[in-house]
Image 1 (cartoon, rainbow, N blue to C red):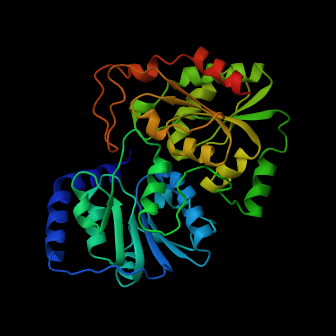
Image 2: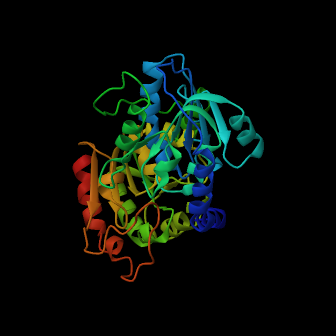
Length: 365
């Protein structure tokens, strides 16, 4: 987790609750009546990482199908904006860190504002300052006071389903049952051609490996990834490491200790190009990460390694997906994106063996 994100979380924890109470107090005198007006323009607030953004796509697709003329604006961060790039569900993307974008949103009248954040207080504070016929958010940590409609949030519910229920509270004729219906990512022809060029000399079926994580408690040792990669090569597959600049260090460690020719694409692909490479891959093996969720949204088979986080909430669902979780007494320990310091030497991840990962991978392959 980089310093800026840590700083934002600290600021939110220190002044967020007070700022929210003050903002809500300023609105108490407002009288609001709801009418069944047509929904033409909505704002969706989605700060945070790649994973939450990817799991929001099924709801955005349904919204576009129910109201084909809908104008959906997304307020997000640079780190997750790539999820919405080229998306036909999102015609306009605003930068959470750009004051001019916040000013434009502040001056826009929306029919519905959906705050998809689950825990931070500052997004709730922001919502109180915006013009919206109906403001909808999760009833967590006292944040419900910022919204006209608050929706219960459950730690054991798949995150994509939680978002689905949030939209149901504001959109008429919303489907009762959640289900995944790819396609959710739309790489350009140029991006597709670039991926083809990168793979032009590869003659084996790709198995993608994502070894990174947003926090060290979710990491799995590099030497075990190397062992998995070697076994995949022996099985006739092409182990392929993917990830961003943050994963370049661990990817190099994997390359150094492996005995097989690994294809290392770490730091070379955009999020959209990562989605494109999944079209050429049979399987993704990953920690609990944003890339895992992109893989699930791209309908690729996945093997995921879970430790500190809730597998029920974040683990991909369906027969194509296998979760490895040791279910120790001390895990899961992450709640509302906060993981306490581990006093057990990350046992929940360290006790996952490469033999387990390979067995589950072979079953899916």
